[in-house]
Length: 378
Image (tube, rainbow, N blue to C red; front, side, top):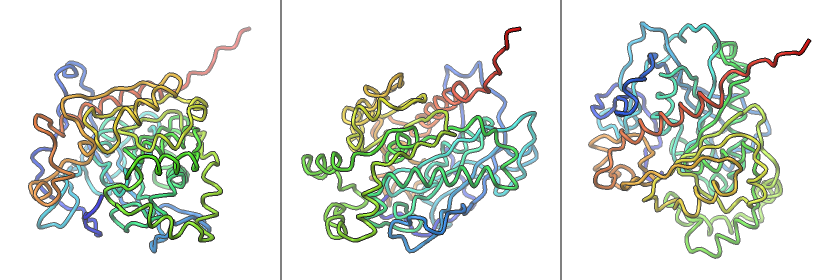
């Protein structure tokens, strides 16, 4: 996301619009909610990791989780302390992980082009309050925290490796590892993160197909965050590291530990052939806004749904657009970043977040349910 601050600060702020009220149809079945804890993390990456041109060789992110009942949640935000731009839910920093009768399921989160791990706070906190551990990464070269590079925008397939690396790190973590049910892992992503979900689920990128689409549709591959992306790509295309990365663009990045994926306003659908999408073996649910001009549903969400066996698709009407799925903005955010913060008339961003958060929770409750052992015949 263009023009977001390079430094990300977590602090207390009153975000009056943030609440996790249930929609009317869910009031009678509201579950017991957990206080939410969060921790900032650096995930262990191999020494030969592809940092995509980023000067920051650190895979950082955020973990949200159910906290013990005595935890005192506070409003969190993104941006300068004196003028925060986005509300990032309610949570307690580094709270004690709450007790449970069993292990917690894990959901890995992937942000959109130029966004950040904290831009998934609205979903991470929602899931954590409902008994999930959620982990989000800052994709190298493609996040507002450490900056943008052309490689970070082009090498989308590497994003799947970021998610897999974070999952591995979480499973080996002395604090969280033993509390995660390795048989109940899912993933969710927004925009370019929706593309990432397809890679993790088993589809493979056809880079030549993607480039042909970029040539055919004007500005299709020049996102608002880097409007001269294709020009920059052509300038580095023959570099050894770029050529090597492209050679691996069609590799499979399927993570067999992931049992289900949830894609929100997914983008870059033309990177996948219908045949590749048909190979996805796990449940996929997709949601998008009818008024999305960044990743139009007809070219993206609907294309995915048509070609993924059993995929469920919901198109939200009434003016829901692409950036409705970013964190709720503060007054300062709406003034400084209207392109990311001001929704269409009649659209309440928090209401949409609650609706989509519940859709994701229902999806993962169903698809990540504990697998019952089969009964042996005697």
